[in-house]
Length: 243
Image 1 (spheres, one colour):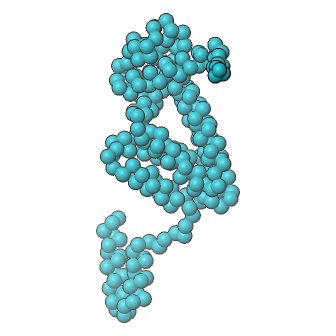
Image 2 (cartoon, rainbow, N blue to C red):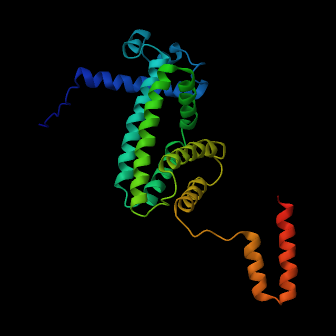
Image 3 (cartoon, rainbow, N blue to C red):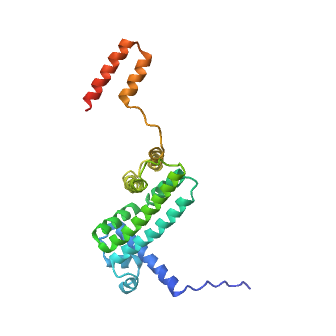
């Protein structure tokens, strides 16, 4: 006789959490299709298969739903910062983050959902307050990570860590939107290029000579004195034309 394995019954809290997740997924699907303001609570209820009373038990309205989405983003942001701290080097941490953003928002309309959330944060004080908390935590965490990298000689110490954190965040946001409009291109090309640019931007290198000066120096070494003089004069004229 086969032994029957019974499932562990879910607690009321677990059931409520499961329902909340279902509502959030359904709302996200609706927001991707028609946008935040064009989506009605009736559409969200229809997508979940629940009655209005059941949905309103977990969320008081659309603003509460998008606020919950923002809080979920906050948890994921914290997890991402922990992953970055565990990386072997700054370059690895930033490369991993670039790939994570690219993969996360590549499919399923998540890029459009992200823009909907941030746009609502600019209109709604309630949503905006939560978004600003996420932004502050993220920028502070990334800034601290960059400062540690500077102390270890992994990043140009002359760069302002906080401004660099803002720059990198804006770059990742832009990448998410750009790849949405270039979905038919090589999906790995843009993230790979971003990784290369990050490496070049953050690594201290010797300052290159000015183009005009470098050209004149090389020419002087390879030409007679009178030709070098003519080349230097021509170089001066080119520089004046750019002023």
